[in-house]
Image (cartoon, rainbow, N blue to C red):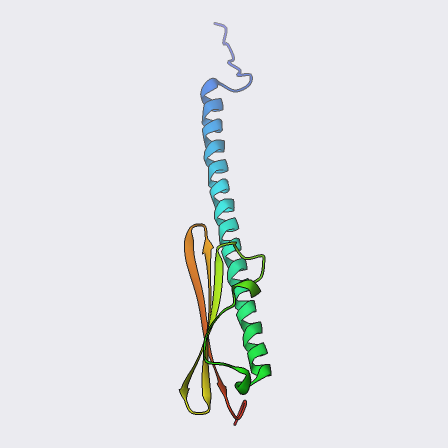
Length: 132
């Protein structure tokens, strides 16, 4: 008897379909990872901008001093960085919890993918200055 040797040339249809499905799953997963990374990166950027703005504002308030602060609420929306989303607002509320001390509450609100985020900061300024 003569033996025949079976050789296969190329891929079968089943192997090709399985490899296409596996490639589709891998590409879909990578797409989701990249999308999530971009969203988290953007959220971090907005939070960093809000934090930087508030820190700079607090330093400016400390430089002008206790006597320059008037009690009440002031809108700071026009001063916010333009890189933040268009639906943004900021306010500053100055109160006097005790004699010789003023409390400054700063708040920044912005929308990120339909979700409202608020960053708040409170600081105190004394009549005698820092460390007195």
